[in-house]
Length: 237
Image: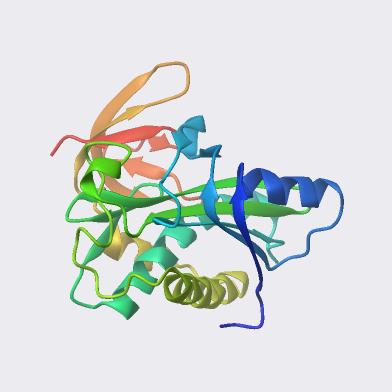
């Protein structure tokens, strides 16, 4: 594992995201800190959705970094996180194909196997990741979800998956901080591109169209030229 990371493990917590935020607010967090838990009782995903998984059935962690690029450019980082997760799975089991639904849902066979959340904190950003590893069908949070075990994934050791993710992210982060445009890598794995999507925007506004690209800031570009910055999207076809 890259020397960049310092990993701590707690058996049970409310939320690794909140725990790291508290450390940042107390000036006790350093870039590269990773907090992993076997169970969290108050986990949340994007748009403040709650997330809970049986103990030791999911890889649940948050990490803190202070990116070496201007904060106005950080909005692309959640996409890089999703890309890192997909790369990690491909490295561990090339026979299982994963894809990404904008902005950072991890899909296998079109079903959600993981997700990410990001929030700025202090001089950095905290990113939370959840990947369904050993969850059985009855334990899945929603009907369109899956787990690595249900997809016959070849590596179910959460420590191995975590190490693979952190290595992939450290590599992509270094390239991004050096100024490389990584969007082409994301586009290759993004199932939203070319799909007709419907987005629910803040305030209940609904926007539909065919997704054709990703902006330098990570926005989803529709065929009419409009851009979706934040919201929940559904693939219509």
